[in-house]
Length: 91
Image (cartoon, rainbow, N blue to C red; front, side, top):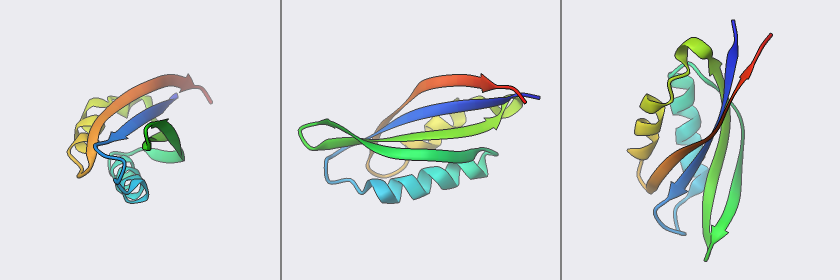
């Protein structure tokens, strides 16, 4: 059985958004959908705006990202969610 590693880019709706709070919410959503959060970082975008980058792994049978993307997009202060990378890890 393979594991899928997915990278998300989460854009806040303003430079004042608390990305640490969003990170905790996103990690909770990932876990509730059967995934395992691995790593996160905050990336400068422009004009004080920062994006939250999150990597997580999930069983390939549960690898549909759409429900998670919709749940994250529904959080306060989130403008959008983008899947930036999907890779398969065997073993």
